[in-house]
Image (tube, helix red, strand yellow):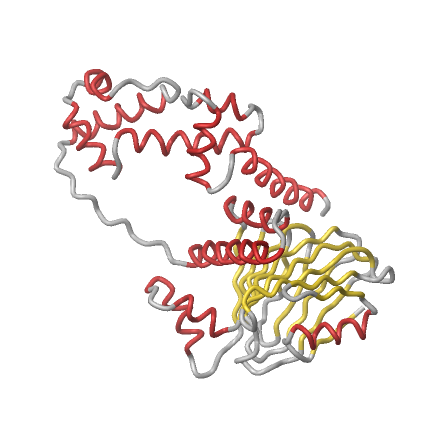
Length: 348
């Protein structure tokens, strides 16, 4: 089945979609839910108006009985939206007129798309559980988010040109993106709080995606007054901390073990690693905790003890400050993403 839109305005597009598919929908002030008819399959499409006229969130979760092609006719560049689309599960195909390469996406990927004034289409495959999360914004809003960031100069140039051209780029969903996606899909709030929460998570996803678009920056050589033998000793101290992550020695004891005074140890860590001795240890503990949560072989309490925390609540607070959510929520989000990616691979 093919559905063609001639407008980017949500209400007009909704009317066209309803007319062509007999979809039912519920409208509210800020959130609209479309329920697919039995003739198409099962599932819903939700739209949340985050900022009137400039920022929207779309969540599609459905399983179709036949392939569905949604085509958009060309519109003026000023009205053509910028779309950041995350593929949580299921294969999706698409194309943009004037772009030679077709878009073929699967779980664990995302795509930043701008069609300019070109026609485009997306195809959802029948018999697959499909879930996508889309952040849709005006070019003006997107361009304002790029301002004054020298590392995104190439992207700025594209959206400040007199003649805009189609653009798209793929990326791989990172663990932090996967967590934000699951928080959107499982949003526990209602009303105005829900909309604010979903806007914050949408902007978080946009931030993470833009950060991935930045070219790698050459590392600035660190000015180090340490002698080569001193640097070797600092690395030995680092290794002792890592190997005794659950019961690390005191600063003085660590300095004695490697044969330098505590002042040189502290200064050496700052010069070699850019942080304090126990700042380095704390970061390593949090990264190790994330690895253990991903492996899913230990309880949260067991992980807290393994990395040197006396109780679970202190560990949870530290982990939340580092990653933005509780350890159990991090594990659930990671394994939901891992499952969808591997399910997609196994179904091919």
